Image (cartoon, rainbow, N blue to C red):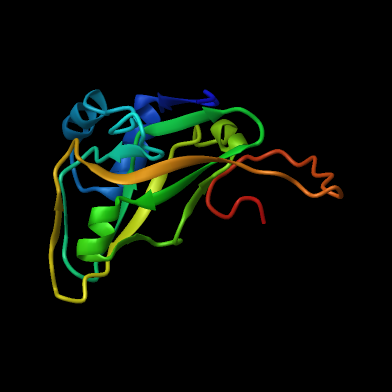
Length: 168
């Protein structure tokens, strides 16, 4: 296997700012969540996906959405992208899905103004009215590194500054 990336934590200040926007909780709860963050990891030697772990307890009724600040950023070699998907079991049982279908973390997102903080907007799209519960520290999403190519005519020199929608 080729090693092409390294996961890191964003700063506590960055995590606190993003978590405060997404969750109604105090500074001490956010600080505790930051201290308990877990770096994404593969569950088995043959796993392609890196599990991302919830920093907070989440309860999501059918039809509800949530923005989850992971506290994670990733430094990747050029020519690679990280694709994000819900955990298979959660998608199968609850139709738990990323609101943008597949998350795309570009190599240059690491240098964005928000420290490259990976955030996931997700929805419990259960058609059976099931409430989804995810405990802090449990996996909810997985990321897969994939190589990519560019067209012969690609002569882009722009530098990234932001996240969602910043490149258009």
